[in-house]
Image (cartoon, rainbow, N blue to C red; front, side):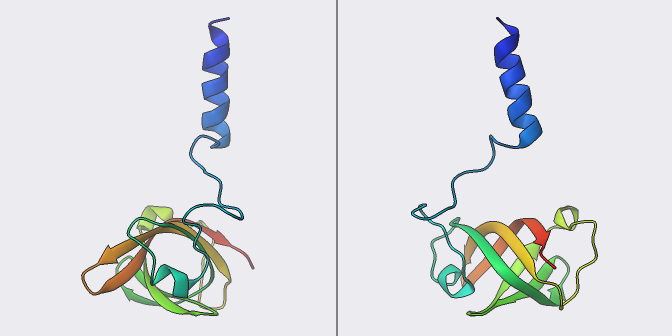
Length: 114
């Protein structure tokens, strides 16, 4: 019986289920557009779909969707193994980082859509 909690924890870690939250309709703080992210509070979760159109500086890029563009920060270790250019459609997951002169997105995960 003692092995059941260990098995449960192991399966949660293996599937990543413990780290994700609900992001569907009605979720608190579910931001899905650049225009909404520009107005969101600090640390609000976001999931954005669009394109990374250019590099601004090391680990900083311009991301664009149908509603506008915003600076995103992507740590080197968070890039997928697939090369990405300005033509690729991507999904970014992360959070809003409210700064003195605007907002950026701190990206935790990138998924290439095409």
